[in-house]
Image: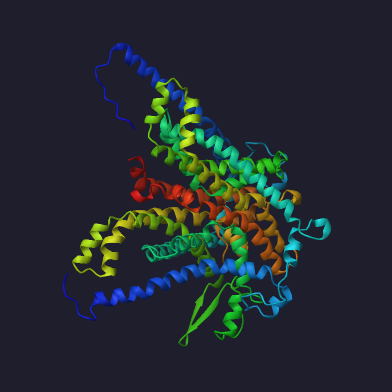
Length: 326
Length: 293
């Protein structure tokens, strides 16, 4: 923004500036209005309408006759929801999935960024290759994983039984609970949930990688040089110089990734269909809407998701909004 | 510099890193590239041969087969899956989304970046929150509303949905770019008597071509890859399916894995080509501002 220096302007000039500001304001509103109208009609209104739907008993078959604002309002959907173990399970799985998926993506992204930080031959190619899981169509990559993990013809189980000596193939995407035997100790693990979390970390680490790398390259070199001269080891440099510089961008990625993972529908729907202990809130909304054709209940679950995210969004704006405005 | 013993912590760490870094790079290249390699190899093998030796990672002599691609691309009347039609649908859908979204978001981003108007801050906040809202929440009212209007299976309805989904991020990306273009050029044009729209068309836009291209590619990729709304809106209208939806529906019938992978290759290739063409452009557009921390 240009800084306006207010010098005693003659009266005529001042009026010109006032009309100029008014003209700008009018042009601004005119130019932004198509965007606002689209967002209002296609996002804001539907969300408000979904809120009213969540307080009604509506089945999909009735929508032809449905009044836009509907008839009776009731808390029944929410009542049923909070009393149902299905919903509480899905909420628990969603939190586990989001927390560990986000953490995994950030750890992988950080490691990748540190690896390619220094120049080497082919660095540009390596960087591009590492972004593939993030840009490739979700339908394609979930199906590659499904085939790779398939018990009959997947390469992972072929490798496991032929090379690692597994007794039998593991149905990674349809087994709810498996056991790992390590040194005679058997530990129960939620197999399918772990696989979808691993998928999430694999698919979104490029996003974390991209942002962490961009930030890493902006870290001034002289602090690091000074630390090296003082005999700091690479891990000390990472811990005391790089990590504090990266804290901001990592926190930002954590919030964004958590929100997006929390919203994720495609990945789980396409990998497991929400079976084998991987049902999350988003897939539950879908199955309430289509399989049970219970519009009210699905809207209630979606509203619950929105409420959780609104809280996160407020936290996000508290911490990062200031900087955005600055 | 302090003198160091041969096995000081420093020496050990430096030596370990010298080995770990290349190993790390190899690890990441392997986990990102292998699945795509596997997809291509599988799509060109015979299914019977895959079931026999699932661990084989290359195409043997005489094993090479294009049967899966033929099956995927042939129209349904010839016993295929009709993917040519789906490719056309996806391309039209994505292009229409790109054109409209860009036209609308260039104006919006310009206004948010350059002009002081009532509600400028809240508009920006509104767009940000749309980007972070669960799409599945939006899916319910849109699904119900378009079902009620009996428009649900139409492709142009999906275009509108995609425009609404991609507008906020476009305004965000373009605004970030406009903010870096000095206003002085526009002011010079204004002194010469140009109107606001002339300034945008003749001064701002030519300067913003790289940013606009990056945004266009980004929108194209989102629209091409989109799955949830395509599933909800189009699943009953087979002739309107997108490639994403078509591939996802291959599992409903007994389809061999090789066909599935051939469909996935067809779905992925346009995106990878675009990405190779514009990687730098797009990643810079996205991370611009991240350097500030």
